[in-house]
Length: 219
Image (cartoon, rainbow, N blue to C red):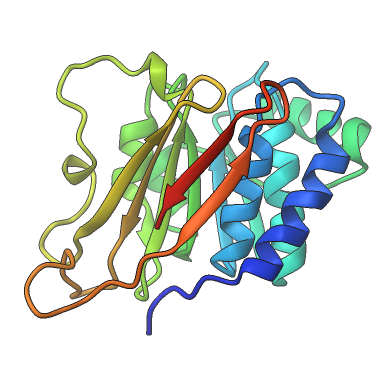
């Protein structure tokens, strides 16, 4: 089984997120990740959030989970962050998503079969979180937001993926917001798309609400 793209679900999630996040200024990040998560029909959507951070992306992921009938979980480092996040989500969009508190090793052990994951590069342990993620056997999509803030100290997607059983099928960097770095990870035991195996590719359009620019992604 592999990830299947649903353009109708992606479009509905995108539109709903635009309506809910029009008061925020995140240059289309929320709309993009919402459409991606919904389009891939993600059943387990996980994100990390740091205290004081923006919540538009979280609203978009919550909307996506409602369109797919899935589960959206936000991972935070402590109880103060949990309280702030819940309050912000409630006040901004009357939403009450699931929140888990703890270290990556502890929290990720409770989240098996992740389909779609968003981590914030402003969080120092984002690479550690990715390494601990227990992905769905059919494959997953991983997203790093605020990727422009990453240092050039050797970060590579393949350094956080278990190459023994999985492969990074493709990656893409988008100049949306402060930079989005995405990777599509193969199913367990899958390959990178080389050799006789063929990977079907699709074009996805994303409109930046702030700048009016159109970004075209080939998946």
